[in-house]
Length: 240
Image (cartoon, rainbow, N blue to C red):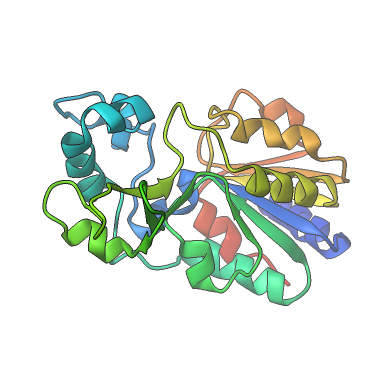
């Protein structure tokens, strides 16, 4: 492990345009559960399968049940940026990191100070009326009884990408451009099973491709350096 950490630091020192691509595992150390681990959201015993609940068709057909689940399992007001979020913001300030591409919807990268963040799946912090497009805060949504509604009567939808919905084209464009222009791509905290997000790796044409993950993925063989372990432990000893 020490040799791998040393090699990671060498790669960072050699690079001037690093992109970090992260998944749910980035925020677990902030107290936000992931999806597929033994204690993840998809393993919860609920009256509907969680993967069905977070689909657009379920949202449209059963908004009461959707918001009941959403308010309980998708918003963590006490969550704070952890060492990974903070280290990435530090790398950006040092001129090493050019962008963060995240599958997370918690807003913690921005809270930590990162400026260039592409949120592929949106953010719980943004909410809008489906009828008039008026914006609302997360507190308004969470504190609403039942289905949150706008002053115009429309349903307020969180600006998160549900199953069966497409990713935002501008966000996709920014993420692809960042990854394509990077000389180093660090992928971390993700199963690399969720598409199209997982497919973004194919746009990387740079020198150093690194995976930092607790568990193995089907794509491990694509990476020049694979570090198995706790993400926070690895990030805490990165030198800048």
